[in-house]
Length: 343
Image 1 (cartoon, one colour):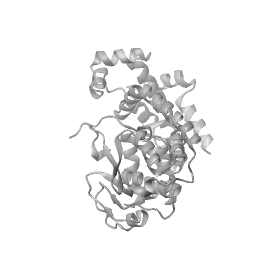
Image 2 (cartoon, rainbow, N blue to C red):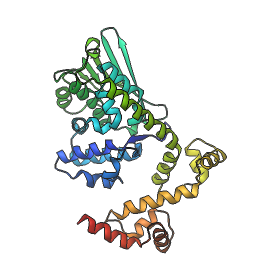
Image 3 (cartoon, rainbow, N blue to C red):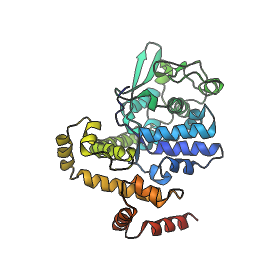
Image 4 (spheres, one colour):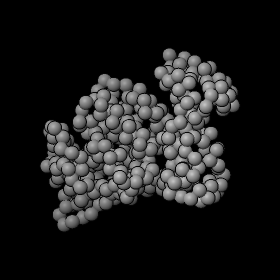
């Protein structure tokens, strides 16, 4: 079994999935909450979610919609703002080639579990998506690949020509029972069970000038993308630690040594890196418990005892005392206030 390195995805991707669920007359925010995602928080620029959490959302969406083409629906709900500055930079590019080059160069702003290449091969341009080493392919559901490739093709149509289509599409997903939605959206031959996800475009079309081009706007957003990636690199270790703590319930069951093993570090190296960031394992554990406590209180079906257990407290009284230290009131008072706000 491949080692599944910690990977993260831009929070706004979850918002788009939620909006797509509403197309099926379902309350998107409710289903986001079921996997621990707050819709408002998800739209914040620096919010990212673990691959594990987004995978749970995809699987839940597939189960409730019973639509094997759900990923294609998600692609139709993507907007430039969904990728923040990266989306605007792509739309302001001079050509499709330049736009896809920007996406490939900065893909990890959106998701850091894959690499993207853009290669010119004579009369065609191949855009290929491959998982990074150590990423378990089973953590990437077919719908996620459909949504990403669909977004790429629909974006090309928006900024170039409405009738524009690829020469062919190659998808790693299994053959669907009914491939019609795929051929209808892509308007070209679609091949399934491929070794990777690929889009084949005509080279001439990729170098045509775009009416949406704005070199100044593209340059401004390139700076914002670079700043985002710099912040992401700085926070990466802390984000990975927090994701690991949440994924191993009850929170706090991971010892410092086990945490270091998950990160492929020695315990001493991990302690030294945390010290450089002015953090300790206990401080991070306390921060994660504090944030998760507030989130789980919003889920009215969870009892106080269940929340206390998930947070890693041996007694309910210990949880209540910790919560009052964090927020200045009891968890019961906070839940009541949150429920009133919802009404």
